[in-house]
Image (cartoon, rainbow, N blue to C red; front, side, top):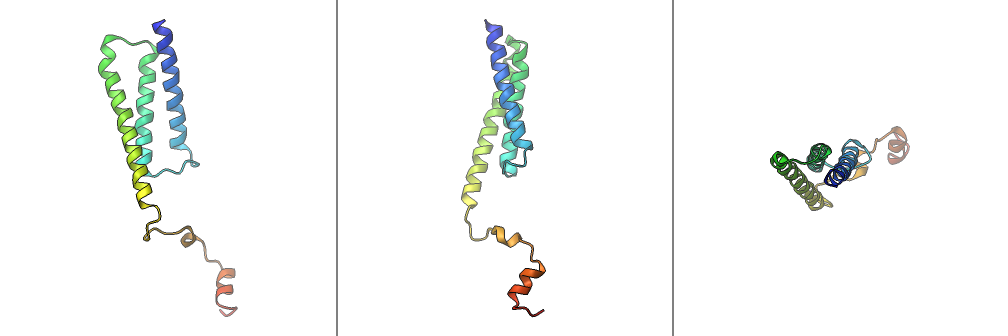
Length: 117
């Protein structure tokens, strides 16, 4: 029974690590550098727990599990910090708006100058 429980936990941690890895590598997830570092810590923590639990837990795995849990806790703290920093900077007057990055092509310049070039 203990082996089955360890395998179920290993599969769950492996699945969480795979989803986190997808979030880290996917361009569809808009995260900053700080949040990405936190996600990497979470992925490493869950991945290491999955690897440790595949062959069952032994008494000498206690230190390694504590380190893996520390990685997860640090990753969560960094993700929360990154989120709070992002929320604090949202709407700040010194932030650039998306329209600042739009290309100014000839049609736009022609329209603004009233047809004169």
